[in-house]
Length: 123
Image 1 (cartoon, rainbow, N blue to C red):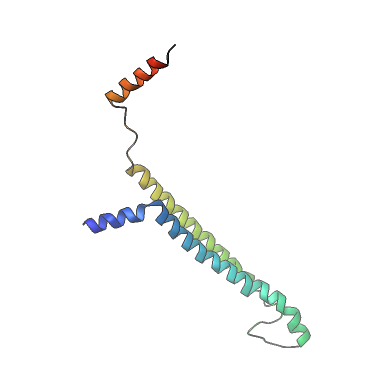
Image 2 (cartoon, rainbow, N blue to C red):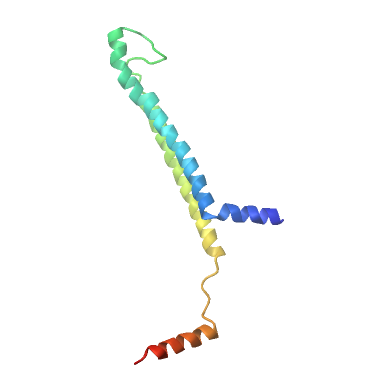
């Protein structure tokens, strides 16, 4: 049971959660960049070369082969992943807030020391 508790504490640390979010967001953003380059930019750049070279097919690219739908699909996937991660992080922070006990009232000693300090400040 001790190992499970240690694992829970490890996962609940802020830096571990932040790192996990960064890795997932990075992977999802890589999909957007890859889609943008593979399905939008490359066909636009190679389209004039294909026309002048009078080639029908270079690696599956055709004149006008820009795949905006694939790029939009990658963007939508990224937004969904980012939103789900946002919800997960929000849940973890809510759990963490509930786990940390609220500040307790000052003890009798602290109250007396505060009164002494306040009395000493008076002219």
